[in-house]
Amino acid sequence: MNSSYEKIIILMRHKRLKLSAVFLLGIALTSLQAQESVNATGSNASGSGGSVSYSVGQVVYTTNTGTNASVAQGVQQPCEIFTITEIENIAISLVQISAYPNPVTNYLELFVEMENTEDFSFQLFDIHGRLLQTQKLTNSNTQIDMTDYIPSTYFIKVISGNQSLKEFKIIKN
Image 1: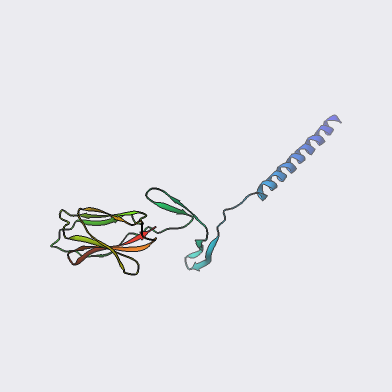
Image 2: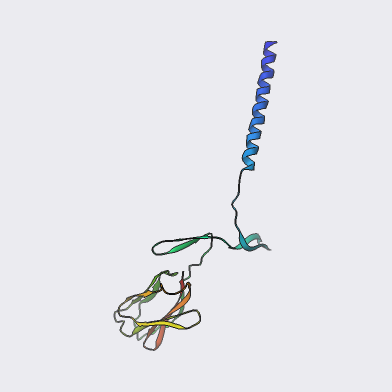
């Protein structure tokens, strides 16, 4: 009789252990939290290839700024490098023209890989086409101060004489 009493006690302890495990699992599941995002809009799109859910924009995000760049967390940002026009002139043995960093925060580097840059200059335009700055290039690497300009889209035009050689779309953060 002693052994059946022990079996009942063991079964009761086993049941109590199972109940405790289920209870603790229930408490743990109720305290779980998922990622949350406040979006401006979103929808579902479907086609012959399948379906997708998407969201557009976030109302709140944080921006971290370093010495050379900044990043906004939670927001998809384009990194666009555009060459608007480029005219190849056989009389000018032009190797390369580049503008970096793009997007820019403080200073834009304009690099013209050419031995003689005497006849070269640049023009800086705003998004409305207004001329903001013009300057002759004195050497192959020119630093353009963008700190006083508001965050927007700008255009840099590199000119030789009266001929436009290359234009860049520059994003200022």
